[in-house]
Image (cartoon, rainbow, N blue to C red):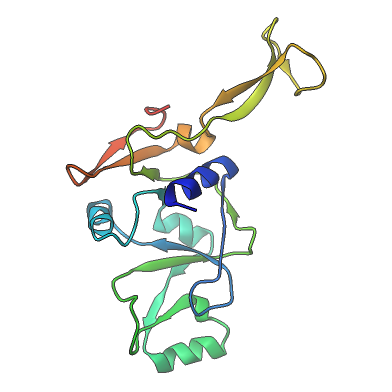
Length: 188
């Protein structure tokens, strides 16, 4: 999936999926720690595409996540023996991860539900996620309906996904090489 497709799925499912990071067996959701001012640097270097979700350290800590330890090979071996290699990145010969400051949120393969986000990052100011059905209404009376129950007048009501409506949206402007921040609901 492209970053854009992955973001679309996250917004529609309201879930972030977990996978085992390189060298580990326990599934985690991985985050790159970066203040907004530094985010442009990560995008400009080509290491990250401008499509994703933004959360806070406090949120990750509250959900039992934390910062990854960057350790020498011998220390990494100790993490591995203890079954905690998902909390460490080795820094020995051949390690190419030293440029990152990573946080992880251990999770099952089902991932984690998302209640709220700090922001949503997009790389195209004209992009909008596909709408989702938020409720059903009778097209003649306007009254709520429990769903498409065989009534030919029942129609879906579609809106942008909840997280898109309720979160700030940060748009990466590639020309000016900066983030443009929009308040919740401004790009609906």
